Figure 1 (cartoon, rainbow, N blue to C red):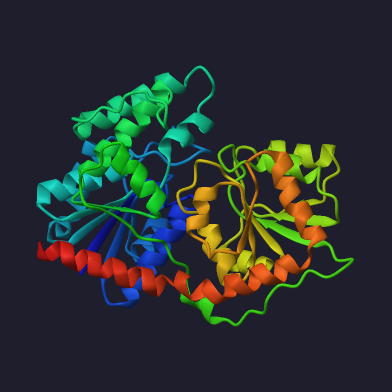
Figure 2 (cartoon, helix red, strand yellow):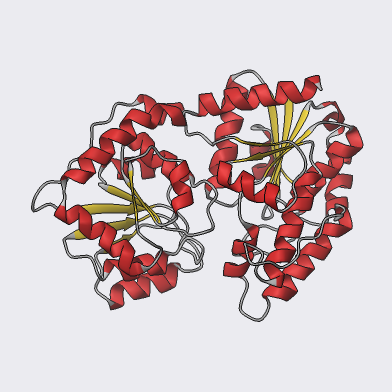
Length: 410
């Protein structure tokens, strides 16, 4: 098959969406498929673009100023479409358009799929309602959500309107973002989500197209390597690892607050960056927390760090729909602390600690329980190891391949 991936979250970024696209692309190509990736990006030299092109990765027309230091922002979809038609006449002969995210580049991908009558598969990765709420300053949330909603409706029709309610769309801004997400999904031929709980939310708010939950996967080589169960011994320092964004939605600051209440020797190794990185470093220093900030790191570096860790951390709440770090932890046999019960869907029962609620006090209580029962680490680790085979990217892409073929037969 010839597959075109469109995403506004790929080049010049890190995170779960980028990891998922890279893993899918590599495995699809290993299976003999041709995969192109089109992504918004910061400006690049001709030499850099040629190097990417050898991997079939192509930056689309993007803003040169807006988004600097935050995320690359694509130009208007019609500009992208016109440029791609000019540069890639072969696109009309592709079999599947595989879309990730819901901004300019992704919108262009969906529109081109309609124009070329090519089946489109839209992956709905995340809670844009919460993302907008956490990122946009107070007082501008409704204005920004309304502007994003209006921009999106210029290119993809919005026949469905989500009204403010007492569930997830409990503000005007959130209702606007749910309106955007649902109408975007309904413009595709098939919708994929990384978890069942997010699939149910999208259906609740009006997704009518066929929608399937398909878990992500990690590279098989991370699972093929043999790992031993973690063991937390007496008089040993509890090694904790954080390897996600340092941002409001990931809740690095509440977790650091929790560490102040931990009643045992610990060390937190932080891998990642984000707009709260500076605040986190200041907070840790001010309160004399045992935290090492290592900055951005690739998956191989993180995998080596996981081998030295007793406990992984993903304490986002009502935001993450999957969490790639959960699979990375499972591949390494490392137990995970979570604060959101919905994330337990991804992990084997007994392989994680769920705090009673998302507060720093309860997160600290969950960690303190480990100091009281050190055998918990080994018990959870053995369960993680027994389930790690389920996280193989080969298994995920095998299902994805069948999904594509079934769509082509309709």
